[in-house]
Length: 338
Image (cartoon, rainbow, N blue to C red; front, side, top):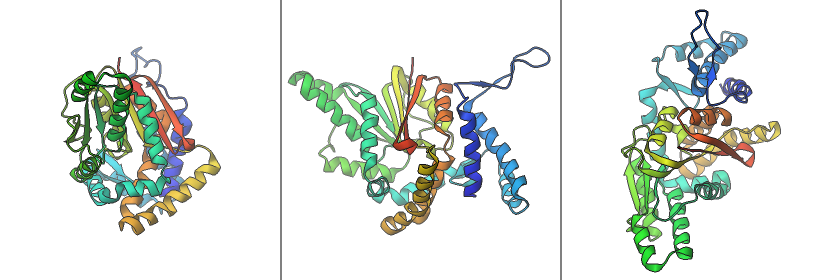
């Protein structure tokens, strides 16, 4: 199955370099009418379906039962790692994963990335350029790692440039919302906030909520971040639409996510480390191999950088760009709402 998925994404990457914010099936139909535009997500799904049929024919009847089972799923099927599952199952399955890993989440992040995730999150927050008095939403941020950095950056600005009386006023006005669908992850974050002396911080607000159905008003946020979360949702396009909805005009969307390595030699080393080492670490440290096997597989099912950038543009964002870190192991995508 790993070989099949690698072939699928190789095809997607080759097409993605020609992808812009919208792709069209053709100039016009025979009756002269314009054909409907194809979004980047629709293209990504079409390529996967076409490639699956091609690979199944090439590799023969041994693989056919696997594809046949996938075809018998509800028409709204999605992926859970390399498995195909019903949409209504995925959120529960992902929830179970993060319930299991919550208590060891930060330790495992350090071990898996060699501590680099801290630098990646620093880079994300530097791109956000937090300011006193801002209203910010950090989605899938249960353990508080990104939110703490945003508050630290704002406090640093306060110390350098704000009068004491004004500082107190702006600190009260600053609101950083940490939204996560998993209460166990939020509980870890709240405990960490207490340990940092931020437990009574009025500007730090914890919210249990779904990234696909945010309980925030239109145009209410100056910034939106999501780190290592969007690949776990059922409908990426709904998450992006909700991010666009809640942002004010001029607001910035930022996404930090594990992505796709291009350099062949580095990719082989990275794949070997991901599939051979990370699940073993999960078993040794957290007593949970399966959850970390899913996390590794979910990265391979996530759209390549160019395709994801096009999906962000399809959601309405402008000035969409991305920055690869460590050769594409992770990428930071950004967009502005005008």
